[in-house]
Image (cartoon, one colour):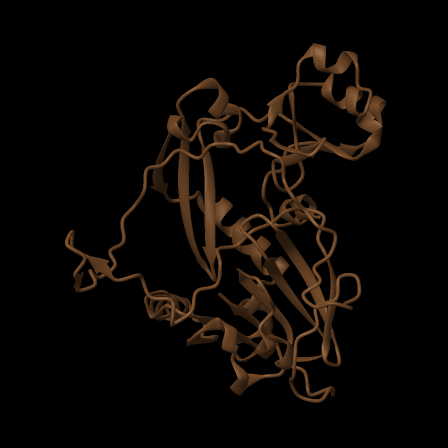
Length: 332
């Protein structure tokens, strides 16, 4: 759907085949230089081990034996020669474009394969590309642009994030409600909500989130009962319960922070406590590496004995009932 929408918006889209038929795969690849890539995330799981798969240029040897193609859908796409790649961040009508320059053969095919070989620069996209990107975003209708300012609410603990975000959104004519507070509290003054999306992980669902959903409303949240135990789950409110199933693909957000979680006190060598040093922010230059260890998963999260499969009850709360519907909110 994204490729079709992009073409309709006036963007150039390489010839693409999505298939699980070996003959169709081979016929397309033999007509010109082509690449194969994964849908979505580039991680795959094989025999309990998580691996990375990069975009790869196909050669004649790849087409000799295509057994296994029929098991699932594959994408094969015509190779596009390039000087560099560009990634674009869109906020309203404002575009920020970054050129990614590859320093070796591997990163030239897939820049994610070797971050040390990359250099970056900000660029101005060509006018026709910028117009196409804006048209594509409008076609997908993203949050405030689609729903209207009065129907979008977001909350974050850190005023250093919320205040600049409010100013930047206002500069492009968007004024959703942004609130600075502990995300676990939600935004009760504007509840109830049709949808809540949590861009942070939690070990249990805060009761306020359930209470602020309409009955039959949806909550998308990353539940992590441990560092590596848990996943993204889509929950539906049914009275006093939240029920749902974990997604098949693994996903992760940073853990939710709270006001009471202050850094530990610092001590001098002789054990005396000294004043806390204010937090500073700095850029890191670490090299991302692939982790290929075993991945523990569980089919459902049961926070209480007697819970059903995929059910996440929360204690207390208001009586069930359907209220006038509102909007989306993003706690983080």
